[in-house]
Image 1 (spheres, rainbow, N blue to C red):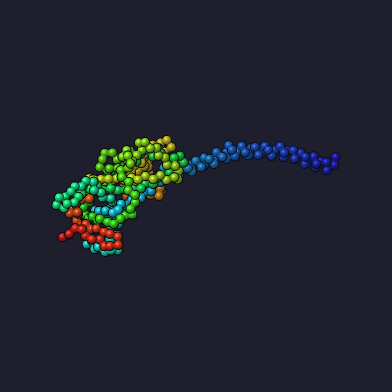
Image 2: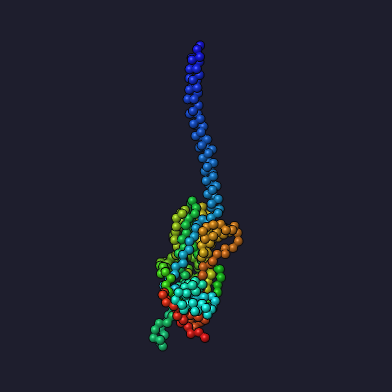
Length: 304
């Protein structure tokens, strides 16, 4: 038998073996990828997702305060002579007001004064208005079960100084909200005054925003408070506590305004919301001023 014939037979055997083995190896590779590699990759993705959930709240929160027209400012501490002079200087008074608490003062009870022959307000109410944007951070939509206020502290309304200021941006103001002096601190629908979530099912999808307006009123005290959001997250009940600076607390974990995990336990120390309550008669304040855009503030109370 010639060497040429032997080589031809060898080549033929190699071809037959290759034709048989190639499909078998392809099938084995496919099965390996399907049952070994893919589950391993899926598990890695799931582990990464769970790790992300551990390190951020179920909702990202953005807070925007809406100031009325005109806005009122109250001070906790008496104004120094330097601050009073700055208020009466056109380009300096805005810096002084940055140290005060802005809010919306509304008259809720008035009567006719016979001597003045005009309506005089007998009772005021302090109001605050916040736009709360919630952005989903879970693969499964998060359900908002309820939104309510939680009181932190109560004080007598401040009387150190008051400034009746210029406009603060003129955002849309919605009536209703949460009366802080009541025993029911759940968010109410501004149109019906019914509890907002009693007949509404609200879900926040991943990376999608949902906007709520949280308005408060107080005709009695100066309240420090925070928002509590009752949630249903992947079938589990959770509570998220929100402060005015956007920091949150969920399941004992403290998150910064950007959603970064700060601590795994402890108290939420972010800036609380504040409603300073009703304004008092001007004579109750140690200092009182009225300001307009483009002008210096003018004292409205004669001081000793």
